[in-house]
View 1: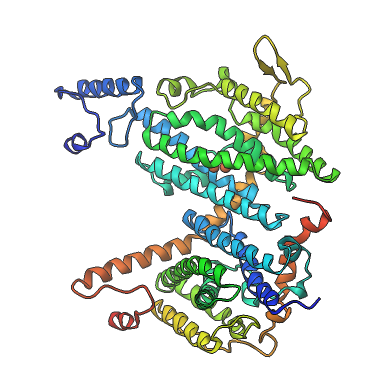
View 2 (view 1 turned 180 degrees about the horizontal axis):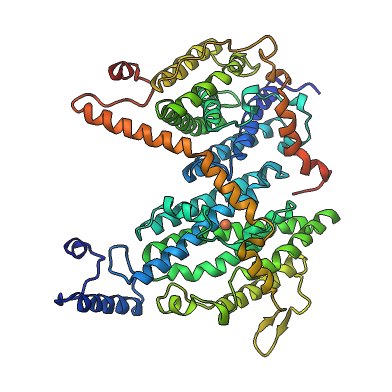
Length: 354
Length: 239
Ligand SMILES: [Fe+2]
Ligand SMILES: [Fe+2]
């Protein structure tokens, strides 16, 4: 482990025990102590295999959600009703692509590359957030997604900025900043609709009616049915339970809905003085599991579009790789020659190569 | 109302940017690689920003974008052409960004109404041209398949390029020098990409200068129908 020891972030036990098992135990003790002390684990630090695979799974699912999540919103780019809204929406969808890039890079620091993860997405072996299996039927859905879906994502993700794994935590800091823009822009879009014509108000209410419950499901199954939670909490990958975060989200949304002049579609939603929180109605978990299994309104469509974009882009990626290889060869052969210009003065280079 | 010369020029330049931005926006969620989702959106956003400044010089940006009929648009036919495959999009980018770069470089060095916009836009457009150049090289000099696709695309869009050199009234630049500079730049990039310079005419009898006169190709009407539908469905509404 000489190279790891040389790296300033690499944690190694003070003295090297003789046999394999003892060495692993010593590494594990150092890892556990670092996590307990709220220190960041970095790529070259030793970490338990299960910690690594849990992180890869979670980061991949998060990355996949960012890129699949582009689809329902991109659905409205060409129909955005004003140029200002069009610019905001294009920038938002672009941000989500950027989030995908950061996250695939974070997963790469754990030794799993983007190609492998995309392949798992395309073959259904890894999931993305089920929320994106619902359709965007009207322009107001763009606002509802920003307000509720980005809002729920922020509630989920702000604690991840303190996640024990450094690259993931740092990616989340950048991402959360942008998500909070998205949330405010979505809220503002809905506000304009809500205060607009009766048809616009109706459009906004209809969108909130359709997106509210799926947004609550974004926090995952109730705590007693959540399979990965306990270990993730111990590793400080996760800091709050699904139900805690869901409750926090509901409490944030209720006053915002009021300011919007829109109703949340839950007759049981009311303030509970004793708890100091809102009570809310029962979530239809049967629907949640159905959508997760692939039976949501858009599962098929989303993954088909993703696969098609990937397959139809294969020749482009192959061309880029082939070109890079050729250039590398030429650079090798051209040692001693003046470098190639990229500014349109390269006629001679073309000849020299021929 | 007879528009002043600069209003007509603002529409011509603004419509180019608006329409191409829209076409590039259609790529969202369909790009061949994640980095291109970001890059194409970047270019689309730059163009949309330019369009908004230019259309606002001519009137209300949303009225102009959403309430004009097809025949009132003054953009080049080149920018309204459907995306096609990635090679077609790149060929369109190469031809248009080279044009826009030369145009804005000249406008930026003058002191006309467009100089402030051009000074900012020329930097953006330099990036657009670089992006198009890099991809033209990768596709042209990549694999046999990509070479063939890029060759077909550069030829298919060639006939829409002649229109770019029709002088726009109110845009005071050296139009003759423009054509030569464009050919030089595009020709050199295609050569380095191992692609032939297309040999067909740069414009047919019908297409010569047509877009600038409000004569467009069939796909443009459908593009506008999609773009304008929601806005027109709610007359007078704010968004
Ligand atoms: Fe995001
Ligand atoms: Fe977002």
